Structure formats: structure tokens, C-alpha cells
Image (cartoon, rainbow, N blue to C red; front, top):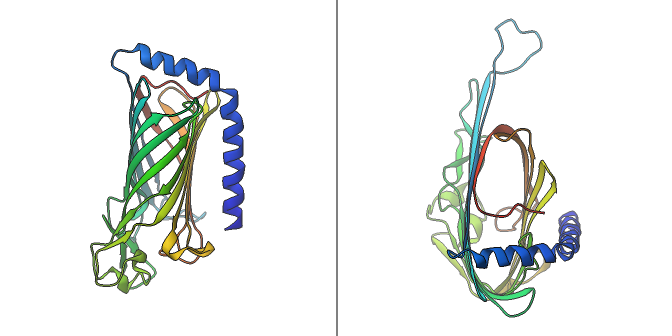
Length: 305
């Protein structure tokens, strides 16, 4: 967990330093947005990745026939007029891998929706109200049990988090939200899932929701164009329930995506997700993926600098 804090502090420090260097670009971007009579910046992007491997029956090198599929979709729509802003993000991801003689298994599964209304109170500061939702599309299983055991599904768990606070946003590249009041609702609609998930995602056994009212939240977002064909996207979230506050009960989530563009329509993406949530597991959870596939992007968002 100390490593997670170290990564976070390093990236935030680097992000703030980079943000200071690009303030003038942010002012130009803001002026361009105001010049547009629609006051909107919009973008839709996504990708499709398919991987396949097959071996003849006499292949002496070893191996297993397999096929893997993954897709992602990102939609953004941001409004800016005078001192008011309204930022909206929908981030979807799903992937499956199927090995011969095995059931298909998820490699990625995420639904993330975020909506934030802001009001400028300083050159680089906004007051804001935000709501975001996090869940997944499909069932997830523990394949080490026989028969396989259901451990997750749509709204199992699901998180609806709100926040009121202040945002440091020096440009379109970097933002840091500080919310001293951030209620959250955790959903676990399957009341039998605790049989295989002892912590039941923090929801009392027999109940389907958990309310956390006295809580605070920190969220950092950084979209950095490292070079002409290489871009970094980072999102870090820290959530602390003040009623059960202790070092080990603070939740952390770190999403990182590094995308290298090979051609206009083909890119390589390296993703990682790190989670520490004692209501899910006492240890840090980590996943990583590497994909090559077809990508598309449309919209009038300015490119990260």
C-alpha cells in the first residue's frame, strides 16, 4: 500500500508541475471554447481488439488454442460558458478470453459515468458538485471453486458517489478534486453473493444497499500527450468514510492507460488497475492488460499537450 501512495504522490507532483507549464495553453483552449457559440466540446473514441492463437495436434512447442476479444468506448461532452462548466464522461470497457476446453472468462469489465457542474471562483479553482457511478456489465466467477462461484455482477457491486467541494484545474490536461462531503451508496442486489464474497462488498448481509454519508473524497485526472504518438491517461480516487476512519479502511483506486499510435486507425494500449478496498479484499488487487487493435476518435476536444 505504501507503493500505491508513492506512485500517486509522484504522478500528482508531476501532473501539477506539467500543468503549470501549460497554463497559457489552457487559457487559449478556454477562449476557443467561448468563441464557439455552442459552448460545447465533444468527443467519442473507442477501439476493438481481437487476439487468436491455434496449434496443430502435433505441435511440440506446447500451447493452447484460444481467442480473446475486448472493446472500449469513451464519450465526453463538456460545456463552458462564462464561469459555469458542466463536464460529462462515460467510460465503458469489456473483454473476454476463451481458452480451449475452458469456460470464457472476463479480462475487462467496467462501467464508469461521471457528471460534474463547476463554478469558477479563481484563476485555477472551481467550486463543484459531482455525481459518478461505477459498476460492470456481466457476471464474474471464481474458477478455483467447483462448480464455479459467482462473485460479481451488474450492481454487485455498484457504487453511486456524490461530492461537493473544490477543484484545482489549471488547464484541460490536469484536474484535482477535493471533496470534504462525499456521500456514497454501495449496491449489492444479490443477497446470496456473500457465500463466496465474505466481506459482501461492505454491505450488511441480507441488505442490498449501504449508505455512507460522512465521507470525503479526492480524485485526480491527468491526460498527458507524452509525444506525437504516445499518450498517458491517469485517474486516481481516494475515498474515506469518516465514521469508520482508519488507515486501513481508506479506499484507493488507480487507473492507468498508456496508448501508442501505430497508424491513424491502429494503436497499442497498456492498461493497469490497482485497487485497495478492505470491503473487497484485505490485500491490494492489481490487473494489467496489453492490446493491439483498431481505434477511432471523433470530436472537437483539443489534443493533450
